[in-house]
Picture 1 (spheres, rainbow, N blue to C red):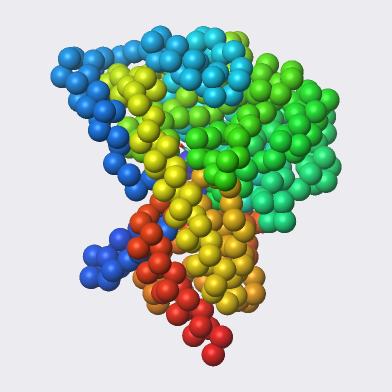
Picture 2 (picture 1 turned 180 degrees about the vertical axis):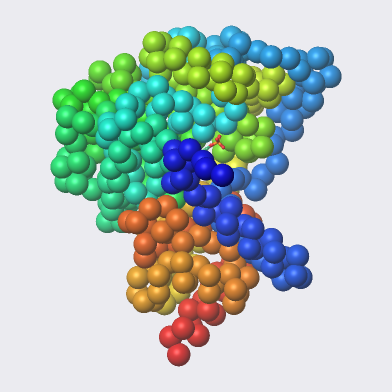
Amino acid sequence: MTYAQRTDHLKPEGAYKVLARAQQMEAEGKEIIHFEIGQPDYQTFSNISLAGIRAIEQGHTRYTPPAGMPTLCEAIAKDSGKRRGIQIHPDEVVVSPGAKPNLFFPTLALVEPGDEVIYPDPGFPTYEAMIRLAGGVPIAVPLQEETNFSFDLDTFDRSLNTQTKLIILNSPGNPTGGVIPLPHLEHIAEQAQRNQCWVMSDEIYSRMVYDGLKEHSIASLPGMQSRTIIVDGFSKTYAMTGWRLGYGIMPIELARRVELLLTHSLGSTAHFTQYAGLEALAGPQEEVDAMVAEFQRRRDVIVAGLNSIPGIRCQKPHGAFYVFPNIQETGLTSNELANLILEKAGVALLPGSAFGKYGEGYLRLSYATSIENIKRGLLRVQSVLEKLKK
Ligand code: PLP
């Protein structure tokens, strides 16, 4: 049998591989503490779940317009515009099953074979996969620990050229939790305009920003909305990863092309899921705020705990629910250390190298788990590292 070459480069996400091994160990009777999973440990808030159930009962189980129910597009335009201080027309909104199709389809609609696409490394593995599937050339720009995992701007500047079609940003970021500071966003915006590039701004963690910092979208900088795709969704903010509901916001001509890609692939997003999304935006936001406040408390506990373990150094990230500690002092690769910690201590976490070559020397831990689990997990990690030193 032969297969089309275009899928040869695809690899599973690191998180799924580690989760599978952790579940195998659990089936053998071992108790595993999970830091590998990239989703809130909260249940979907009950007003949202009930709205979804009600929608099914009322027969909202049909096809919808491919770009989403007009009422939902309007609600998203209003909410997203208000949060970012920009005007968004509902026709600029494309609803999708999760945020991922709104990463993938705009890339397909923009990138010609041979076009270069700049993306963050360490970064969400889907970026490189979708650039390659579109026939583009992925240009990894390193994130720097010293600047709280923002782009290394010198390398960024040197990576731009006439072939650059698209720049992908992710702030707050996965896997680092880094938030791109405003002056960096301004620099990137200036370069995008000078070099006539599009910008894809993955803002899926935009509601999870700590320490009183304000979320900044590059789309709200002068001249940027007409060349930016904002990617956001309900998965993280409303603990709705399994409902599959996300969206993209982009100039209308691009939105119509993305809508056509949706029409001929996914058809539309589940009807009742969109009703749940309407309730998420219209309903009270206190539970989101409480969850984000709890994440900040957990972040403080996990950062302090990691920094007290010899061989580990951890920056305090300002967003999302990940920490990205530096483990270079241990002398092990991130894969070796992650495997050792899983096998010896029953703690599942991810090697930084699962997020690109510049992720080597780091681990990713998700702190979307209880403070009790964080404390127990870190004690176990500490015991592995102490034995390493002997
Ligand atoms: N973008 C980033 C940076 C993510 O971390 C994730 C999920 O982990 C997504 C996009 C995908 O979101 P969704 O589950 O809504 O497709």
